[in-house]
Length: 99
Image (cartoon, rainbow, N blue to C red):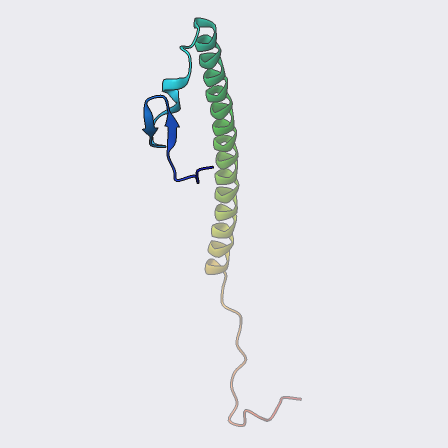
């Protein structure tokens, strides 16, 4: 029994593993070709639907972020326009409280 050394022994002699297995497959029939095209199209349609769903989710998130931004901006404007709180006059004796 010979040890595996990464090569195949065939009728034509050793062949490397880099050979494509397509050379050993029989030619595809028109039905198989059409079936492969239908599968590829179905996969592309599924990917398209998924991408559109993700895009819709991202647009929803962006709209929510805009609403939050606008709410924060509104609050900041209100606080910036509000009069400052009235400060008590400071006394000479800061540790002494008024009665």
